[in-house]
Amino acid sequence: MEPNDAPPLEIDTKLVASHGHSQAIGLRFVASGDDWAEMAFDYDPKLAMSAETGVLASGPLISLIDSASAVAILAKTGRGRPMATLDMRIDYVRAAKPGRPIIARGECYRVARNVAFVRCDAHDGDPDDLVAHAICSFYMSDE
Image (tube, rainbow, N blue to C red; front, side, top):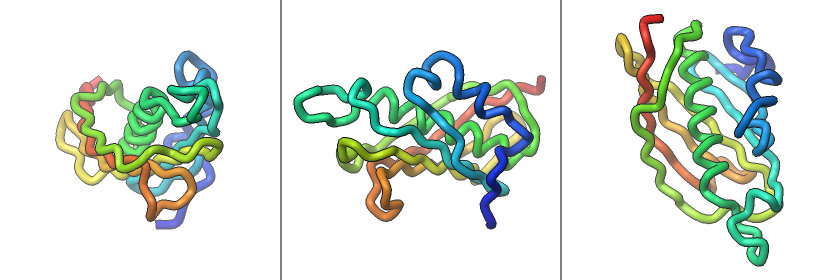
């Protein structure tokens, strides 16, 4: 699939990223396709779990994976629906290298009536050298 430089459903990602936790970690939209979306944030020492090592804390990574996965569902379904994360299993493959941006690509591989399933990989510059891999499911309301 060819990437789009505009978010699916004309989502105002500047609005999404300008509130709460998303704003605090600097979350931003990168690209999307028919069933996938990429989001990222730049490294910030405030997000490190240790000032001494500079290693990224897990919270921002979890938020990034959750957000990229949700936007992948919007890309696949083509419509916005209220949703909530039901389950998210994350395998941390390695620590992210301090100073590098973190990119997550979620792929929605199945949508049932009220549940969507997503795979999401996160890396710090090389998609073949993962920081984390996640499998997620989301409940979607009928509206």
